[in-house]
Length: 151
Image (cartoon, helix red, strand yellow):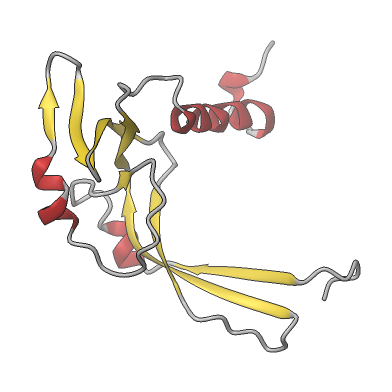
């Protein structure tokens, strides 16, 4: 337990260099979907989702459906120095009942991902894109890049 009496959890993330190197080689396969899916295991995304994605020129976005609901999406390239990771959980290795250690392993790394909305064309006002904007703000506030500093 922590000094305040709250349980503490430690998370370790391990990444194999081979997995990280593949992010530049293979096309993205990461889908950011606005849904809570409680399935924990492999999913045949290609057969049940990806093959039904099409480009809607009129709306200027990708189109698909999930559980009968229309999805609009677009491929987003992540900023330089930023990658998206698919993590796989390991077992809890708690040494004591009040201390928990969790290990996550990187199984996929991507520089691009498809971001989906329910029946709304993706825009800069989406929560995901707003979160990416905070990365720029953090760099301006805390980074050492001289191009962001005022004279």
